[in-house]
Image (cartoon, rainbow, N blue to C red; front, side, top):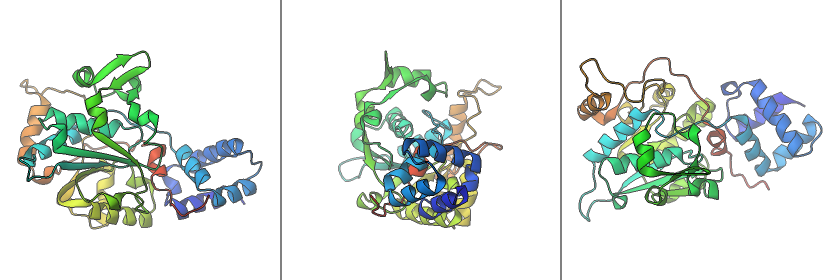
Length: 316
């Protein structure tokens, strides 16, 4: 009884592909959880893991270190802005634009979505943003909206000035942005939340699918297809486009960003701001199906990526 059995159990219950993280990472996470749960050997911990959904979730959270920030792959948010303008709800007959972020982690992506929609002229009543994660997204950490310097890596100083207030604890998202995000605990695979809230015009599910086995990916892709409205866009990482194609997802409904190693505000040789060039290109690009820059590394989305997939199978 050892690491191989635990990896197999994670693949069976969570759908995790052990090769996505590596045996050394999983072993370190298991040893940390063994210390926390006061289990002295692999066999005892494996027995504990099989009996406890809470421990399975904790191990999933420990396997991958969280890493994300505001406006990561900022071109994806520019694409969202163009899409929102093209489908702007007008009059009482039009339903609000609906956006889903899953997994949502601490809320950086969902808050970025709200700020992007506000920037393109929509009012809070013209859109609805849901953020879903099995991790405690309904807790004080996410709703308080307080972030450190590490959450700002894209050079969006103006956005930080407009939508955040500096405090001794960090930067706090303003009330308008915070109140526009609906945080929910939920499970994308088992459907413990998503099926209750209708379809969405845009779904952000980035750096998530690649962590799972082909079987689990198929289940997730089918779920995303059902959740996406007929006109909707699915935002994924560039490295995940190929697997969507393997699962017969409509290429015209996939939107991706560029490599996040690109400068935040590059200017072309003739002085034209890249945002203007991209906006013009998006105007004529069907479904905002952007091409990713080559060589983008797959970063670790974080404990929420795995936690959002833990099967709710009733173990206590």
